[in-house]
Image 1 (spheres, helix red, strand yellow):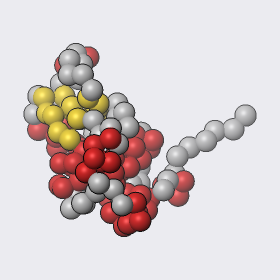
Image 2 (cartoon, helix red, strand yellow; image 1 turned 180 degrees about the horizontal axis):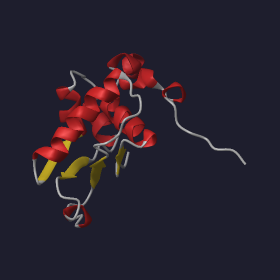
Image 3 (cartoon, rainbow, N blue to C red; image 1 turned 60 degrees about the horizontal axis):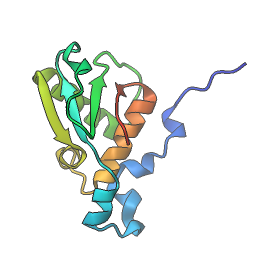
Length: 127
């Protein structure tokens, strides 16, 4: 029996940047169809059980995560921690997170979210 663990080396880190989508020719409709859900953060974990907004990903951030992250993942992680700790209830979008990180393509931000989840830094993201 063997154990498989996620390492940064196993992730497609180039897709975390706008340059990873240069040849994709995406229109705004394509991005909308990509199914980028709204993200909901709860400052109180007891409130997290009440998933009342349909079509949203209810994100919980491990604020004690201490393993290595890429610079882009670290930047997003810090934003997510502040969203979770800064309010009782926060709703945002992948597009707004992309802008906060200086990315033009929300797919790059979505890929960072996927990677953070696969590394165990967040939970609840539905791509």
